[in-house]
Length: 289
Length: 289
Picture 1: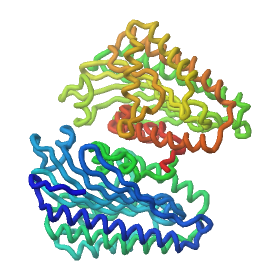
Picture 2 (picture 1 turned 30 degrees about the vertical axis):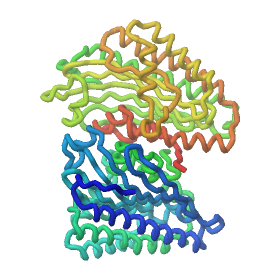
Picture 3 (picture 1 turned 90 degrees about the vertical axis):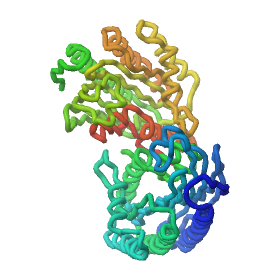
Picture 4 (picture 1 turned 60 degrees about the horizontal axis):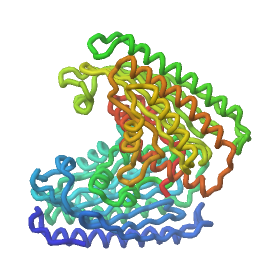
């Protein structure tokens, strides 16, 4: 699903490599999550283990993607979307995008986006997204991951951040302190004066070179190492009705963040992507009691 | 909760009258809805009847309001918020508001806002809002009401629209055909290509004169006559689990509309109003399965 676009910044070779990487990362994540579902002997063990379903979609105007979604017993709802889209930005939206001249609003974008809502309020939810975008004047990498436990545990928060810090330390283009502050600033719900979770990293506008691509790969590898580990650590704990209620209400706040503030959601809705794919991140059930 | 603001367009007398009207309309709606709760002999009759709870809130920067909220057996969650707020618009937001010069972003606004989410998927939900806003250059009335049945019935849709058409016909400043089209255009969820309900009326920018005030009163009276009638007509019908599931999923779309597109929600979040009051419109439970 890539096309030759010599008029855009960045290289065709890197665009192809990013596309392939996101697809292969998705396949490994799918396998890891399905194996957790299969292994579960905890509170959900009388439900059948979930399996991912994949659905291909195409975008009017260019490109499309594959949504993989699983409704399971540990993963109440998890979506992994890999998409590659191109075309011209809507004129009004183009003004918000770097490197997009008023007379050339062409773009090409590829990325992986993952959101997991867990059945147990003790198992943290998570979001991970990495992307490569090219416009006429500029090509860059961006992304991030943040941990979203309805009932935060210091130990999990510490392990998650330690893994991301180590990842950033392996790459000269990455700065854990800055990317972690960026996540803290970005993943907030200003109208409630709340953070949406316990943070992680967020980065954007990383020049499209080999270094950025290597870092983006490593963010995926790091996610794959740390998140399944955190899930396995908590998935056998039982929970109370009060804890579940707190989780559902917390998910209401999460939905507010995604619909009011999230850049990826806005990008998707404004570029006419499949709403099912864009809004896959919304929780399976949420309350505003 | 009004202050003398001679520098604003419109008259202090009309601002006071609008304030008083919204408060008295709220009291009558509260009484009508509580009497439905008390009378219920339908599927929810083993739950205790709901009563409204009122909570006063103040806004940093000027004004505040009273939220009245009821969690009942017919009304799963209904909120009626009457607020009067004033101050200066945030500079970026001021550019979106009529009559707001860059050197004088003062405003004063009063309104009533109601959203009902019903327990039965056969009883239509509803939204009603009327407001009076004054800025330095302009003062106006706006508002509307729309019916939101998860499982629409032609008869209810017809009765609701007939009542609104009759109301508009009583006032030279109101045009049912135009206001009804406006509601159809406004109450849509573009990213899903769906309407959020079966419409009603929407109006804005009605010059702040006696005619507009009389029409705004009549919208309230008409709501009070037709909506409780529609509820009483449907509240004794039973429903299936499949119908309830459809209702919860439909509410997810409703939440999307309110968080992504609704002007009132945006106005509230951008002017620093109490988030509990602004987001009172969100459904008690919603699903994105």
